[in-house]
Image (cartoon, rainbow, N blue to C red; front, side, top):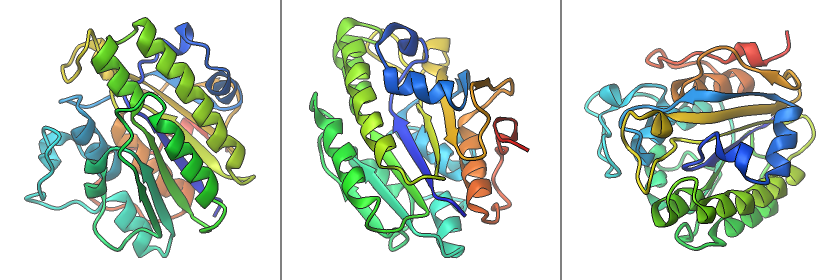
Length: 261
């Protein structure tokens, strides 16, 4: 099966894509399928959101309610474990360390972490690492996490000038990774949550509404997805694209509407 690349733009509100200059993300949407009204989970906080993304269950099921990880009382097989069990090679590139707990040890072919999410240019290191290592490790799945947009929201305020400038920087880094992706790969790009003022975590629309984009071979071009997509749908969609069995506990659905055929 062709590889899948999942890029996370932490804290990106969909309306930022209409206000910022984002030529690479604009072109990606024009050549793929997208929705600007996908839904996060409550609490709309980074680690609960990512645990839901990679395990396809809400926080009420996995029990991670803040940015402090703990083991699940009733474990759910995650995307990385499901991929590993199907002999798929996976890699993580991230600049926020708590994301190391999204998978169990010894399940990744490569794990790249650098503590740069609080630096204005901090996402460049992630893009450069992904560009360097993606061709070398023959990965079936790669997670590429950009964390600085979220930090800009906390420092400057969501939709402020400083926040919009960071969105524009990250668009460049997204383009760097897209240019390195092998032909035939499928790419998913979305946020985990939005934000308001200098915070997030509530059920306000500004916190809960996110962009969700997909492109590549077998994906409809210039198509606006009508289904209500949620964070729970990402892992089932990736599993489908990789041709691996779906764990029974997962609650999300494949975003089949975005795919040809």
